[in-house]
Image 1 (cartoon, rainbow, N blue to C red):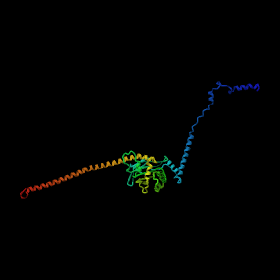
Image 2: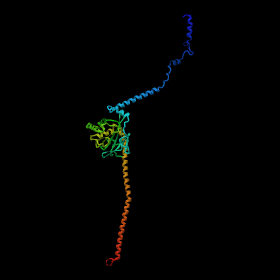
Image 3: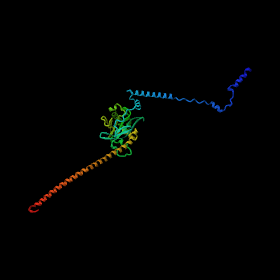
Length: 360
């Protein structure tokens, strides 16, 4: 460069801000670290509008999916599939009545279901003794089981525990009532019962027993249309014979099965040392002592009532007996007085007239 251009260029460079040193030059390490730190991000704006819109859209999609599934399951071809029945059970009201039994003083409530305090089966009267619920997969309540026992099982007024071994093995009258909560076909019920019965039956007769039980269950006209919430199955045992009835304990269409070991195996499902369903045994552990105390109280009240009635009748009869006795005594006195008067009159006449030979 020529000398004419060197001086203006030098002045321009020296006067630029980048070339002018700061008063704190050189820069400290703190300044260098602060310069290297990126600035904080700007505050995020809330997305209430977008979040609410997304939640609304998700709820609408779920509602459409559920509604479509229920509509699809309502068709005749899919109504009986297990998935559809599970959806109907979980998402729709079952329409199950509280019970098909009257609600009065003789009713016992078990887990929301009303059962009669006593059932008459033939000449036997069986007493409600507790029970429990049967769940499938721990979620779906299939049925509520209520036990009924004859008076022969209640030996004490205050038993320490229920005699489960005696109940299973005894031939005295007993009954299990299954109150349905979940819709099922009778074939499924028979299959479920047979599955738990098979290992408890005598091996030599197990196949024949299960076949006969399945026939007794599936041949009933009431059950052939399927079991619905509120329907009841009555399974009674006496002297080794099981009777299967639907709708009522003494239904005319009930079937009797005299298969060896059937009653013991059936009650063993619920009351053995290793029950398949613990809830029924736990419920009977509470219900049996209560029923024993109630039966003793009823009998004591009846006995004391009989004594009181006899005493009241005797007390009521006392005044009447006393009146009869007084009347009888008065009559006897009148008769005696009349007799004495007659005797005295006769004696006086003889004295006045004298006797034969002039003797008085």
